[in-house]
Length: 276
Image (cartoon, rainbow, N blue to C red; front, side, top):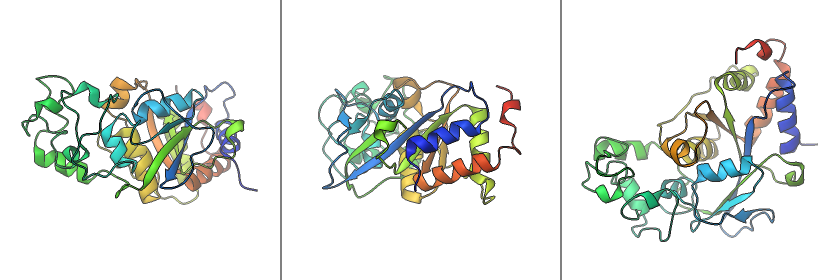
């Protein structure tokens, strides 16, 4: 019988071999494709929040559901397949991330590099941090290159995306992706478990932008491979993820394989001796 998310998570934590180890943040991600019905346990947040904030709320026990109307970060909405990257009209309403800008950005503004290189593009109305903000990249060309390299579910094909914790009452939900938020020593042990059976290296593809939406959610979903991230400015400044945490996003099958690797390799990797 296949493991549920709560069962796999309990085995993952137990395999560290440290009974008093603080609970590691693990959040399941379920995509709701066009025409599908969202899980009944899922509920929209009270306003348009960022995906990194929604994941954090899921870690606290909530089951947030984001749609094109309630995804606060337009880049996340593109990456998660909720909006089409070529849409030229700004997404309306208050949004937790873009409300810091002077003007509401359209999805196409990201693709064209205008948001990520607001100064070079002459679009300081799209700056996050006022008149001295150069943007995330120095030139429009750099911004376009950065955007092109980001994993994205495009064309848009999702009605919603749900984040949920590994709790028993949600055991019927099978994640498409599992996001882990880890300290460096927890990260290395998890990577050791992930690579134990195959010896295949974990190759991180990250940019410092779109940490949760691109690196930890869209990339594992699109590529079918785990990916790591040091998170991003939105995760750190807006969602306030702790400074000692980074992330790994794993397709569900890889998460299960990693748990098996944790158990099988425990005697060869003495995690309890890893300095905190």
